[in-house]
Image 1: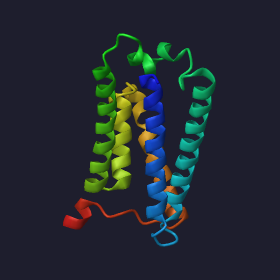
Image 2: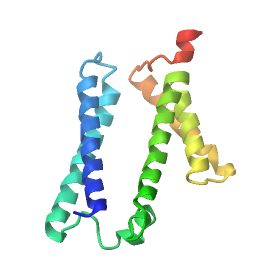
Image 3: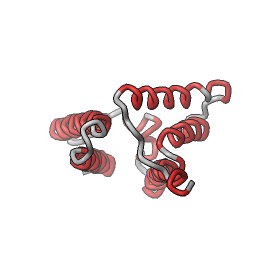
Length: 165
């Protein structure tokens, strides 16, 4: 089995575990507090299972879960023969740090503010969005989160700043 195929199976399996765990955890929440985690967890679990099923079917038919044009795409250029495997793990590590940074922000400043900061930073540093367009996404994300919170009467988890101050 090629490295990229194994990594696709591993990543899909990891997502299935994470979303299943999220659904199990959310089942212990009060009824209104579990709506958002259930929707996100159910959608994520469904998509992860679908991805794994498609990859498994493709693997059985083609002998690889990755299509023939995969090495030419931007996201898989690191997997071309001769590319150092360290580069692949460095890229994965970079995005893991993005996720950990987002979790740390949520813990320290709260979910809504962290979402705005994370979206702004990610779009600026990773997507290289121009400054004149950068304001749109954080406003949309904050608006969506606040609308959702207001619509179903959600109370976001307390952050470290609210616990200290």
